Length: 376
Image 1 (cartoon, rainbow, N blue to C red):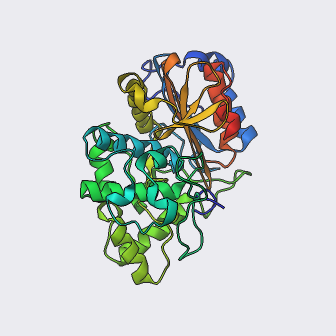
Image 2: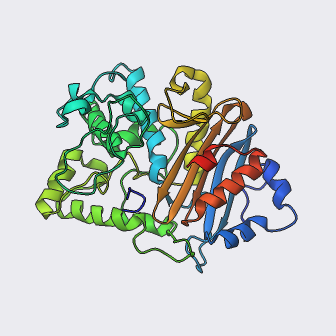
């Protein structure tokens, strides 16, 4: 089990402002996207960014199966693990500012209660998923321990992200959601995005659906609401609450706090729109040229896949491309940055078969078949 289990075709917003590029050739004569939504049993999808240097936006389907509210690029989705590269951006900025060292043990900044090899975990290990930690713990009071020495190999870990989240709070002196808003979301114009879920988001949000296209009661919003209620009883709000305050709220409620279920959570609590996340990915695209050392592969997963600071690296197409998936109950998302093609795209879907849908759309746009789509 991981966090994923725990927890009319529309065009551009402004007529003529966005060019559909290769995808337009595929769907020009018939509603192919709507047909694929029906085939995959995914109620809706939103895509935004740039393709071959040209702005691109596309959305189709419904926020909830059978409902009248259509998906647009401004519909709010649970980003799930697309949260991670946004957090990594802020961490890299702290490194650039000299406030955090990539290769310094996190335990040198604050007491994280780590023992053994875990005391050697650094920010670089966390951002490259080489801490040796499990993805998540699901039993309370289980000590956090590594499966191998940090840096030895790749192993996906949300627990590592939360350790770094706590470190960033210590360094910045701010609650993590407020820090992320000030450091990343506001400067990038991501006005519809937040790491701190609130009930009012539901009026603009997509509903998660299962593999048969039925709405899921326990989609990601279910767990966010449960966390919100725990904080609310303690007089807290996610945007202004620190990790320690959240832990105290759970203790007061008599509920064990597991990192997988807490929010704000830099591993998976981002709520965003395709329009907002597309802006972020275009900044990442520009950054691959401005700060190339930050995007060099740091640890190999296999012949085609590696990992750099906060992103996967796909080497199957010649020049490297960068990616991250987002996978939670009812939502399947994907981010793709391909500098050689001047392409940066986010795909947000509200169905458990969404990976098949976003993979199909990406192939239509690229006319290429990246290894990452098969590896995830």
